[in-house]
Image 1 (cartoon, rainbow, N blue to C red):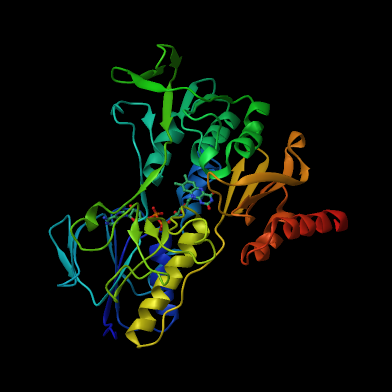
Image 2 (tube, protein in one colour; image 1 turned 90 degrees about the horizontal axis):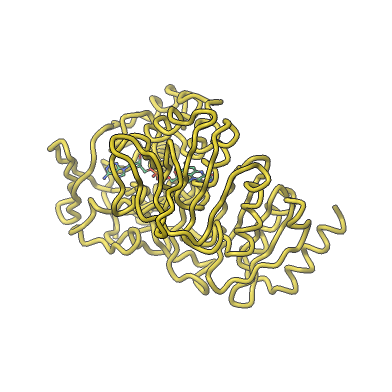
Length: 413
Ligand SMILES: Cc1cc2nc3c(=O)[nH]c(=O)nc-3n(C[C@H](O)[C@H](O)[C@H](O)COP(=O)(O)OP(=O)(O)OC[C@H]3O[C@@H](n4cnc5c(N)ncnc54)[C@H](O)[C@@H]3O)c2cc1C
């Protein structure tokens, strides 16, 4: 199907959305681009929010995604500080919270994710979540040397914030309901191995504990556990994950199931609607044997998908074939002096095996085998080994071939 593309609309003015706008222009699209975003800031980068912005080392200007001149050169009509609340794909119309309606010929959905909150989370001073610049600013302002921070949830963002706060002299306790930190991303053994850097730096991580409620009248004073114990807190960070921001797409006819379900080319159903970034669930053909539909919450994925969604929208408008987005997911995390890198995917069936370095030294590399093939590589402060292994993950590599490859690399290092 050919789409006449005079006006492209991008919803979500952050990483995936900005990449989509840039790619439309760089690929020669001369029509109108409207980008709708509910935040009031110029587009900024999120990874520093739990790292150098939270530590106070960088200010907000330093984390802008692009210089103001580069943003202006794109010739995009930005609609900031307003939320898309409804999509009608028949009339090709988006309704905004401020009452405006915006029509489109082609649409890119890049609304990312929204932090989850505890069911009984009180709206009192000192209780934080961490996804936006405003939330990071509020948390940063609450971190005082010698005060007590309780982080609920030992995922990557919670642990990064814990490390940053500890480096600012805050006493940090992390509470995790599962048996080990970082279980969902890395499995129990490697999760514990990676998080060991926290123990070495004075952060207390308590696993298998159930949070009952956050205590405090106008300001938080502690976190009560299911056995009645109260962990004292001057500030609390609730870091229990992210849900894809799809509420505005209810009733649109798009398939919503833990994200906007797309095909291999990131098309969300109608030929003129694509999606990109944290909000997407799609068949990544490099990993469909272990995960038929994948949703990825990593920077590189959002950037690449933003560009691919734009290219594919342009392809459809020219009657050309679209390109599947198939890639090895990658993320990094900085915690104290550890640079953690992960390529690929794991499932609950994955088995991890250390192939270089050793866990006790805090410098190691592990490979993950799932479905009798290599599906993931984790490195802690071993950058020279992790990135070259990407090629092994782009094809089905047997465990023996992977072991031999790592042994060879270690021998020649
Ligand atoms: C604190 C933090 C640290 C991170 N660190 C790392 C890291 O070290 N490494 C890594 O790989 N990844 C990291 N990430 C993840 C990475 O930042 C995300 O994967 C990436 O930002 C996703 O980009 P996105 O554009 O898809 O979504 P988002 O960045 O979530 O942007 C979506 C935008 O759409 C807006 N929006 C939502 N709904 C609507 C609506 N209805 N109407 C209008 N606008 C809407 C949102 O407000 C937001 O501005 C981190 C994330 C956070 C929060």
